[in-house]
Length: 452
Image (cartoon, rainbow, N blue to C red; front, side):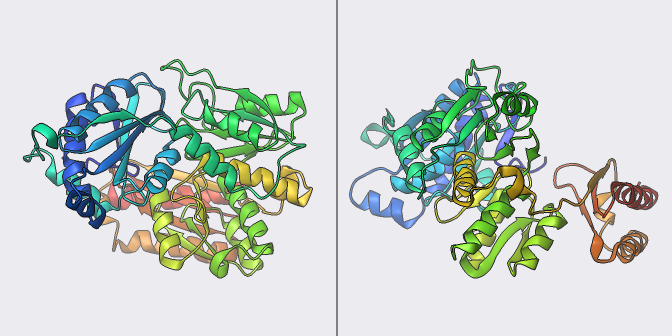
């Protein structure tokens, strides 16, 4: 059996892979692991129970899964605050703001409605490191905490959860967005209620799309995985920019006034340069994943900004931010962490600060994005490989070395095994797409020959 937790929590087909029974048992196991800290001990010493918040995106399976999680926590002696439908980053903020012991988000992020997932946030509002997830998994099937009588937890509504989150977002702004026309695509997801409200309260003129969730239409034709309607709307309406959330709004992509899609690397570049110019970029560095474009690295390097690489996943970006005491990091996919304000990727927060940079600079999003040259990037997945033989294979290492010698400092090669499948991922960046594709296929051929 493979590891239950993936890159971002536990995810699978709702009521297939991810059942009510599994959700309840995961909650019980999490209660056993996540209430061992000093904060929970202090509460118990005062005769109080640990507390956790639960939120979900609007997919239909969120109802029964959140009920199962709430039951698992309450039966373990945890007081549960149900925040209803809210973005994933709201859970991180609420845990921190209300000094809760942990939080649970029910969401499959950018996946379509049949899937769902469960992710946990620890005390302080951060995602769990691998070793803590492994401990939770190890508790599955063991005797859960089983208080009786007055020891069981209560389940209540977190009545002001959305207000707390919205106000916290608005407090991060130092400038009004008045004069900007923004088209928001909420992916028929968790941001449909709060995101339009926040941007309007920030002063922007807002046109909203993808904000009619019905439980089954999340990420369907809308959102960051389907930005085509947003691109068309921005151009048709003559708007200044478009913002596309994913289903749980922990990431965002943008669209400039010409209808061009602006990815997370370019958004990171805009934020980094703006913060650098105002002296707000702590330690003059950012954290990015190994997949971030060479163009971002070159632009930041030219400005004297250090780049720290991490594994793919915004929790690894956060670990680098904490290790190096940084204020900004993120991923090409649009997971961006503004660490002075949040502990996880937050699509609404990112959108607010991109719009703020436009107002401050008086520039269009297109001009700000064009500060960065994007190098053609080709990704090739080689399936059904013996990935255990990758490390130390001389022929593969020689092929990569030859490619790097050919590219020089005008490109790069990244080769890594998948963490969940028997495949090898090859990424090549070069000055031209033709060169990138040719080199990627050459390396893929050697990988197939050696590991197939």
